[in-house]
View (spheres, rainbow, N blue to C red):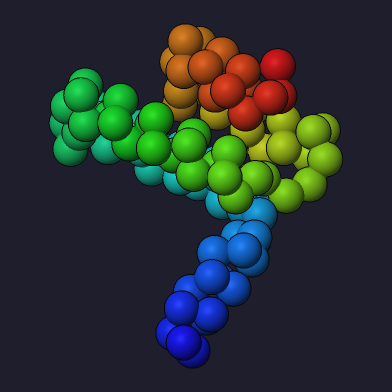
Length: 95
């Protein structure tokens, strides 16, 4: 069946890696949503966890140094908390 073949083929193809700048942009947006009250604690946690899971599936493009260069300013300027930072880098294998 043609439909089943295309579905299987799509499942086997890898998703394109995410650019480090895009990850930083999404983290900034998520953090702003929490600080503004758009997301309560539970919603923020859900979105943060889902983002990490999706990043593990898709991966982040670039070297470890490039990824850390894009993400480290978010920790330095307080955009994400120290706890969220540690969780992010640990679960993505960057620690």
